[in-house]
Image (tube, rainbow, N blue to C red; front, side):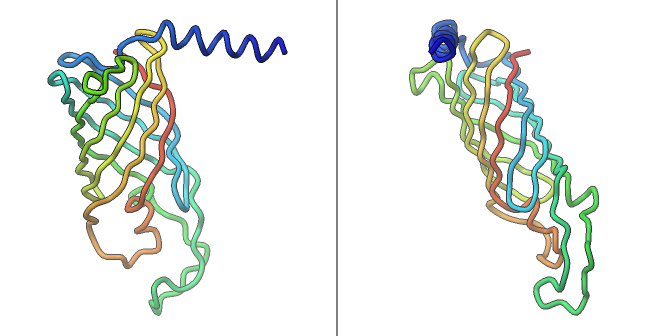
Length: 175
């Protein structure tokens, strides 16, 4: 029972002392966390710079650490793969992005909901995310990314790694 009461106290303290998630021009937010998707998992880092009350731009990079190797024939190809491992280009993706930061629109200052678009090495896509700040400098984030237009042809067994929906979560910092 003491653990439950302590947990409830900490959660309520975090909500009572929460800070603004996005204030606009001059804001710099950094996210670092886990990237989860089909066929692999890894790390994601992003940085967003506030340009106006509800607009920011930034950059995001993903690197897949754990990826399933591929065995067999890919899409009817005559090339047989035996325990194929993805190279750096298959594991890494970097994107420039723009966001619409909606904390002032939805009326909850501590929560920044941000839909946006991104242009990367492997695709043009979109994302929807949210950040909640417990203090002025620390919060948590979660984000879902998805491709809209994919680059290249689907002739590589690891083509799908950076061309699918992704889920990310982790820590967010105010610089």
